[in-house]
Image 1 (cartoon, rainbow, N blue to C red):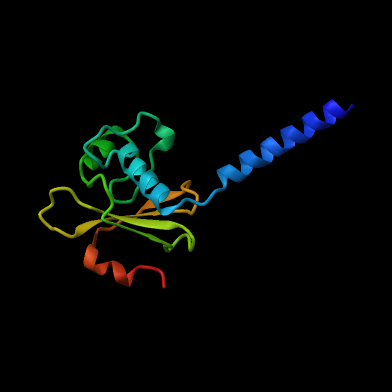
Image 2: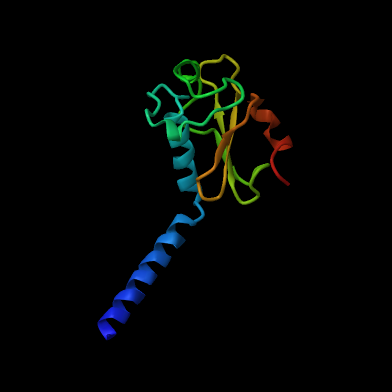
Length: 140
């Protein structure tokens, strides 16, 4: 009986630990890594986009997640964010990152990406921004 009780307690603790790990808020370093993964998976860098359609996120500028859209996104953003900060218009405790356009000639133009605190929900802003405009859109 004691062995069964110990086994049940162990399994409950293991499950609780698993749930706690999935709800862990990202550190800044983890958030940067997740943003970089996101733009690679979604085809914005010079690397190929993921083949896993579940990881692709539609965005307003270029529409859906069909092959033509992914090709239009290709190589449009730098791989590394220029700036990252905590808080955004969707998630007070989430993250935002600014990625420069690649080779646009406009040295401070780029796109904003928003993420929840856990790295699960991500959105790319539909419009372009200039880096100098970021102060006006950061949460206060």
